[in-house]
Image (cartoon, rainbow, N blue to C red; front, side, top):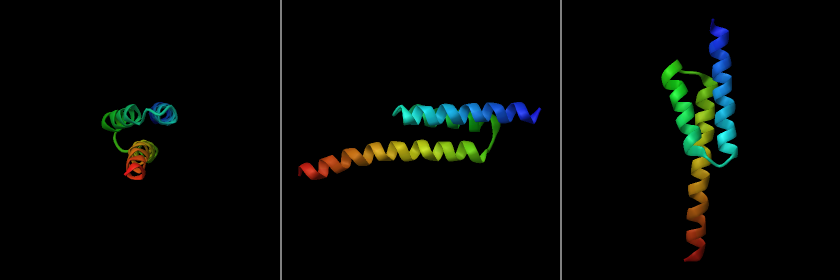
Length: 71
């Protein structure tokens, strides 16, 4: 029974990673949070969520860096 839950978490982690790769970190965070809310804590899902947050921060940092250079 636990094996099926592990498989679903693996699927969510793969989906989160794919969304980050596609440049859609907000969707990736939502998918990871939804799985965590539904299934409880999981180290892999927490790592995937952190990865999505880092990707979003990179997007914001890139924009800020460009603004600073323009000044």
